[in-house]
Length: 193
Image (cartoon, rainbow, N blue to C red):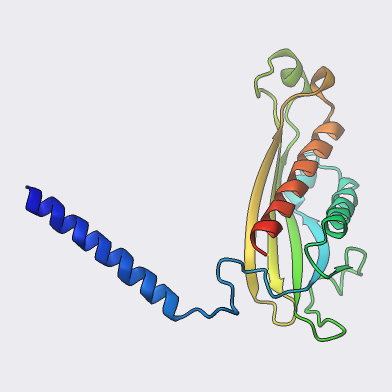
């Protein structure tokens, strides 16, 4: 019995050791595999899109530019990139196309899609509490090489709003979940640069 356990431990150790060596052979110091956003001094921020089902569920289209503006403000204030280019007001025909930075610096294209929104119930938030009637917002963000279009990193986030004065209105629920979404995006950028 002890021999089997010892053999199993040796096999597992060998697999881990070989796995680390195999993974290390294909990477170089410049590629920053653990920090995929490193090496990109320029960020191009494209329009956030809302899935049609999200609008039907009650997410106000007027909230999208507010969310975009908050992301831009945070990117400029926290300055994780040398330059941030705002393309949120680009015409629809230009949005999403490949982009080359003016001075040839590598650039990332950041796109976002609101995948799901549930307004929840203000009455349930007020009367029941403890998470009942929570509003939910789910988004998908993608970072792609702006010149090639190749996706470098993607992240999905879901945030809930479940309490507020008098249960919080639908507008408050949208605003609070969007604020938390921006914080999560900034954390992702920080951890991957």
